[in-house]
Image: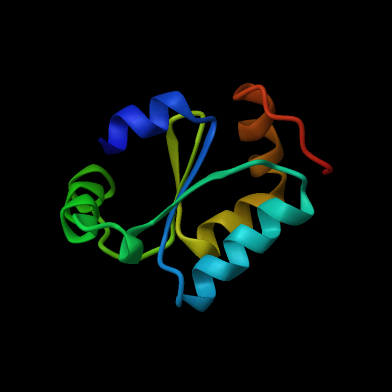
Length: 101
């Protein structure tokens, strides 16, 4: 499911509704005008299984986990650092995503 969602959506955010780091990442994409597909793991009946699958793919169990163009960007700190360095812009452009950067 994780790899399929990542392939279908240029920007994927695996999140939990109550997580402040997840909110920060979602707000960043909103400010950039990026329509990220967000999966709220705490609202899924099988959310723990999806989180286990994410851990297999990323090596991390934490949220958020961000993918752009099928590439794992990382969590909140990684995504913000990618934005600040310009790497996020490159990843978004390569995925065909227009952003206000």
